[in-house]
Image (cartoon, rainbow, N blue to C red; front, side, top):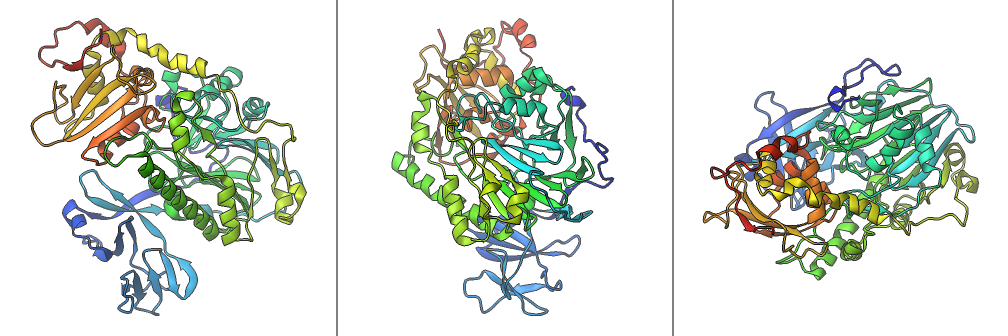
Length: 608
């Protein structure tokens, strides 16, 4: 199936005839109005429809909700008894809401207020977004039927890959079973069971949550395409298609189904599933709810705020990420404050915050069983030892220990590759030792070899490509990329594996204000970023039109900023908004000798 032919499937396996979940802008503020927001509570009214909203501003960012009490719909006013400026009081029955936590404090332990998603635009403006419907899984409720022993089994394979046996169907999540992710930066920590690829090729359904290569693994899917190209694969209807790179990858898959958000997809009499979008990254991430005989399995994958923070409570099994470390920041940054000691302190603080957030989320949702996964990767290549040593991650054991402390009634599971959870047995008696079957004691848990040479050589094959013999590739590539009219100058330096500039590598400036290529930084005030990229990965990304996640999340560069400011518009474009088709190098090569005096590329260093 050609990627442009992929459409939302509205009637596969008796898909319910209903509208998909959508997002609606309920309030907009321009940049000036955003700057006028004060610390603490802000009450705002939409002048078009008169509906009111509360925005809470703190050093941690912005939170927002409707100005409407969940008890009987009364309006909130500021609570004059609250000296911290975080609590509002309902004018009907004096219920009180702490807007900083979205918890009702009077009466205590009653409700959580539904949050609105806060989207800050590139020009500094702000939008409040509401999902509709908010709780789509409540549509068409089903009776809960008792599960028999062996009827539902959940097998952990590696990283984010789980196999669910649901009656006679086998459902696999996010199969990354071989090869690296993010170019050559991530490698599997856990050794998949020997039959993992056979299980993949025999699966009745495959769910791929998003396009990141630790979830959508083309080396893995190449095996699937060779054995069973028509295997049914399901993805959410994201603005950038999950399989946007399919044609370029030359992996042949013919049964990719793009499903609408918030709609039950019925597979058989007892099995259905629903894909939901992420509230923070609706263009990127999804999560899934599986319903078998009324028993719910929730997999939030990598979502920052799955479904905008509205999730079903008391599900039978919940799975989520836990580790952190899936970003180049701050490990790949240098200069200024970015000393090793600063990075260590920052990472320690961020991991602790993530651990507390995940534990509190699980405590609030009260699943019967919780399993942390989707964090078992390692920076295994010897050239990335610094990243491996610096990028300390949370452990599943630490998260489960914290959950056991906060919510001892929740059963936690720290799986090993090949471990199996029998859901029916676990629900009947969470203390039943037979509910979890661990792999044999001699089974290999951690990988100790990764075929580095095979994959690194494939990436480095781009270095000698014909296009890079002509400096005009630079202008051609960045014109194709389509990012401009932004006061940012970026210096790109091709480097070796140790980020030392190559004597015969390219070293150039790109001025994104007018998409020019000067020999020196301009005299005007401007933002500046210096990026050293490993030459093989950079040229591979350029040649194939890949997203820059391979460079940034894959730890394949080193970055310095002046001033030290994050440029969301720049990074968002190169990480998520590049054209869907790679540069037309066949068109470029016949014209690469054309006189470029009108728009010359000026190199700070010209390759030999």
